[in-house]
Each structure stands twice: as structure tokens, then as C-alpha cells.
Length: 373
Image 1 (cartoon, rainbow, N blue to C red):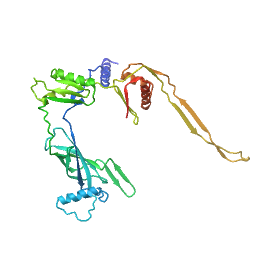
Image 2: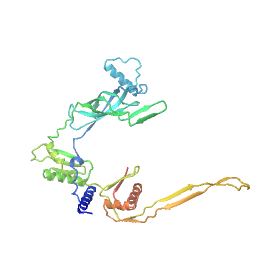
Image 3: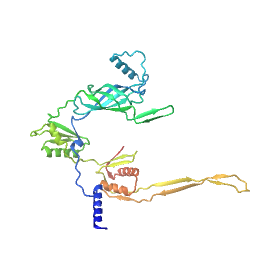
Image 4: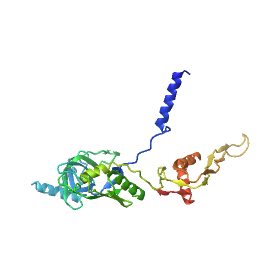
């Protein structure tokens, strides 16, 4: 092998090691405050409304089984100056519930997405048009008005002898389908104090967040009130308003501390472990017993000149196989990576590992909270 080829192989191996994480890397930066906490008053608000969808190709509500759809249709026609006389019978109309999230600081005239869901026995909303629908908040005030064509991801089709469906054809979305009519007033700029709510409350994380803010802004700018809240105060010498202070604070990085927890989903066999999981010194033995039973019946015939009948003689073969496995010792106080390596050394499957983790918890040998989904 010549020198240039050895140099190329050496560079390739070094690049591969760096790509898969074996090469030394710099310390991982912590998440930003905007990613682990919410600012008080800066949140979305839920809106809901009741409306009618028209233009359905015979897949709407049955007016005989949906009296509220009949009443809404009659009332709408009367408001438009049409006298709804006689027995109205159509399958092209459906009563729906319309929901949306009003973003924080949404200005009047801006547009938001809405979700439309069938309320009656409509089979599909494909091709439907939502009529003007008022969206109200928890205070029963109208904050947006929705209207537009519905985009449905699912479909359904049926014939005389069968049917097929995919997705949910009775629900859909209207992109930018609602117009904001009323703003939520919150004067954040002139606030002197503002609370930061941690999405995962923790004493250590709250204290570290307050320390990071005080180091960047100045002493006394932040204080941890409890595991889930940090109070941010605008310093007296700060030249900007609260918006400027929040912009400086939300990009600060904080080292998040998490409790030792193991989350198990027994249905799918998924196991997620936190990095703070520790285990005491313990010995584990894992094996499996396999029993195979096979039937191989044989035919018994009499001799050519003898007397008797042809019979079937049953024959059963039973094989017992047991995996040979000894005790594996896992040292106490090991980190998560060593615990996983010790469990993998046993050659267990994810479902067997779930049983081992639960047995470790029952034995008091694992210092972590186990949450089964």
C-alpha cells in the first residue's frame, strides 16, 4: 500500500469517526429559554363556532335524522329573504363545528387556519363550502369570522356490494379561512414584571434560569418563585422596554436538569430512559423456554392375508429447548450508557427489557421513576 493510499484511508477513517460521534466534540449547548418556558400573557386562545357547509354531492346530513341541520338551513334561508315552505329535503348541506386557535398578538385583519368537523350524519365534506361562521372565545365574544372551501384529506366510496374509505372524510381544514375581527389587548411593552412559566417544572432548572438572566441583564433582574415560575423584573437602569428585555432574555441558554425517569410503551415495545437513571449493583439472569409440539400421525395397515382394519396411529413429537444464560452483574451507580450496554450484553429483546426494568424497580435496584403508557 503506497503512502497516498494510506493517507486517504486514514482521512476517511477519521471522517467516519467524527461523523458517528467517536471523535471528541465540544460541550453540547443547553436549550434556549424560549424553548423551555412560556411568557405570561403570550399564548394562543381557542375559538369555536357552529356553521353550515353547502355544495356537498349528496354526502351531507339527512335532514330527517338531523333536526338541527334543518332548523339552521331554514333560519339561514329566512335571513336571506327566502321563504322555506314545505318539507325541505336535501343531502347537500351539513352542520359542522368550526375550531381555530387565535395566536397571541394577532392583529385585526390577519388570517388564521380553521378546522371543520361534521356534527351530524354526513358521510363526507369533500367539495363543500363553509358559509360565514362566527368564532367566539370563552367570553362569548366574536373574535374571527370563517368562510371558504374545505380541503379534506380522506375519502370514501361505496357501491352495491362494498365500500372503501381512507382517512377521515368528515373533517377538513381551511387554510387562512378565518379573518380576525377583534384583537386581544395585552400591553407587554409597559410591563415592569413578567413571569416565565417552565414547561417542565424543576427547582434546579428554575434556579439556573434565574442565574443566567441575572448574569446577562444584571443582579436582581430575575428570581425563581417556585419550580414552575421565574419572575423577570425590568431593572431601573434598563433603557429599553419589556419587549427589548424579553428579546435579550429568550435567547439565553440554560442547562436543563431532568428527573430520572423511564417511559415504557408496552403496546409498541418502546423504551425511553433519561440520562440521570442510575442502578444499584445487581445480578440479572434472563432466559427463554421454548416448547415445540408437532403431530405426525402414521397409517397402520394389516398384512395382505391377515384380518384387521387400516387405522391411523397418532404420534406426537415434543421438543424442549431452554436458552442457557448465566447471571450478568451490573455495577452500582453506572450511567445510562453503561446500563444499556449491560442490558444489551444479555441479548434481550425490547419486550424482555421492559420486564427486566420492571423487575429492577420492584427489587429497589433502580433509582428512577417508571411510567407505563
